[in-house]
Image (cartoon, rainbow, N blue to C red):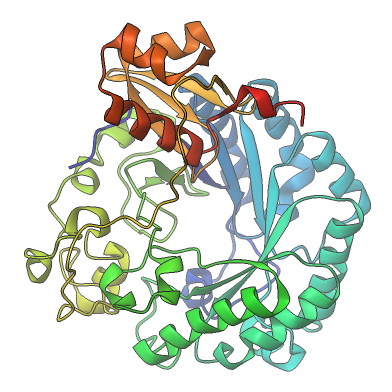
Length: 434
């Protein structure tokens, strides 16, 4: 069971359903209508979306689509409203129509990063997946523009049977031109696809995808990731694969998605609407309690020691492939038994007399239980009201202060400081000017 936050920390905002690509792994590819989307219908929801995001103190917005750059000029005033209210934003894009003017304006507005979709460096494969002539050339042109303008970005391959043999080749060529961050992510089954079996990775192919990423990290010194939450049992005792097992499903817990029609969903992959942005963000958010409960933990996972952190893998994948939200993720290995709950998290040597300060980038928001300290989508922390008020008032803390003024034990103090350091929320005061 997860606490219900007053509002999501992050919103995935689908600003358009239109795209100049038609990727096989995208739900739009499998739509059986004429594909026409009314731009005016999309824009009608923009003002409501930004107003609700600002009023409810959401920390970060992922602008996605469709292809967001198709509507970016109309979108700039809304992005500026986010910036003016201290809300960070990133963009998911194929960057095929990125221009100098667009890149300069986004940099001026303080874009956090791009997530660039590139299914394959081999153009014939890329064209097969995207249905776009010259797909690799236009993507590389956009990527080079991001490099030249020093805009942070990662490149992501959505992996199916069509491109799973090209992960290393793609990463190598990207590394050669200066790309530092590379992701390969198993395709989710489009909920409206009648049969995706020709494209879904088998379990051995999925494991090989992750091992290819490890090879890329070790060989080309690239930052690597896979951007979905996978069932933890699939990693077994393979120490190398443990690198990927700390991702959690955050749908309905800390994030939600606003569709281009205004419908609010737990995540971009889910097709279930819990309300519409015209009716407000919070009513829909509050309706997602089923995603915060243990309702969808599969019966097969009931004896697993990781069931509350893993939740049985991806619920949407369980639904699309196995027919029920509480079914097992198709990539689960329910025969695997964890020996303990040992954490792989980083630990620091804590000196109780050392002063620590809040990192400048950290933002915060009160909650009914206390507050949220937010550094990034991966690094945030929920804390009690007493500690929240104490930390914001003091700004500078040390272990002895926590022990003496808050009355918590030495061991608990070390755990708290370690967690704050691990999540980049605090830093040692004596390292600020190093």
